[in-house]
Image (cartoon, rainbow, N blue to C red):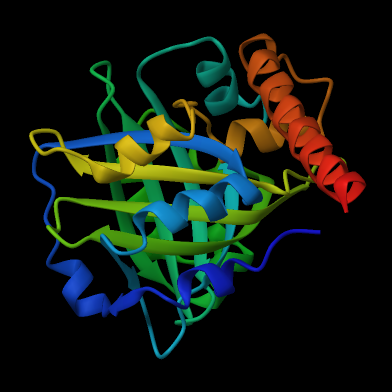
Length: 268
């Protein structure tokens, strides 16, 4: 059973969405980390006085649903699996609490920089990306080397997110938990709970209190794509050499967390 993340963030000072939008990270560095929920609770105990938590309409936890598209032969997945630096992702995302839907394209260049382009769409596009002409034009413009009509639904992801920003407003962190995957091709479902995915977006020229706390708790960076890990976990027939070490790492973290809970219970 996972700890209650809401209990962790309740003691933090809130920041509004409008105030968050003012946080401009011009020289941005993005780094991902994975830890179990118990370790994340310790992490928050170290940082809570130095960070604000994003609050929207009184809620500090936001729900996200996403549907990822790929070609029939899984070109986007295979490019990532083959360690190609230049790669793309196509998804439609439902920001559940606000009721907004966006079609989003992510480009990663050969310098490791990620750029995201998106347009707001209606609920019907979330169900079927090919139902809207404007969406077609957007995707064809962003992904000109792909055949729009060849895109297929591959994976859905659902998760809860907490977003925090340091009081100097030089970095923000997203904390994703209850992460679950559904494979549209074979119907398989998987999840990574009680593990939590954190992404640190920071100004590369500023010191990071969050990184210091991560170092203190021995949490190391782990580059992870929800789409690729979700595909690999739900479809063993896919080539996944690049992701095997990461999947083993996730399983190890789960076992260490289980061992910690068992040990604590034994002491009681």
